[in-house]
Amino acid sequence: MNKNVGGIDRILRIVAGIGLIAVSALTDYIGPWGFIGVVPLATGLIGWCPAYLPLGIKTCRKA
Image (tube, rainbow, N blue to C red):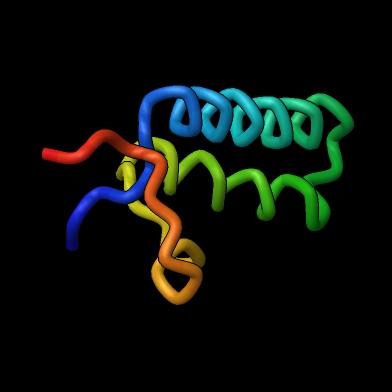
C-alpha cells in the first residue's frame, strides 16, 4: 500500500475529520456526519485513500 495522500491534503483531511466528529459529539447526536468524519480522519492519518486509486490521483511527493 503506497501512500497517495500528501502533506496539505493530509492536514485538511485530519482537520475536517476532527471537526465533523467534534460537531457531532457536541450536539449529543452522532448521526451520519460523525461517522463520515472518521473517513477523512483515517485517510489523513494513514496517508492512503482508496478513492484515489482508480482515479490515478497522488498528492504526495514522489519518493
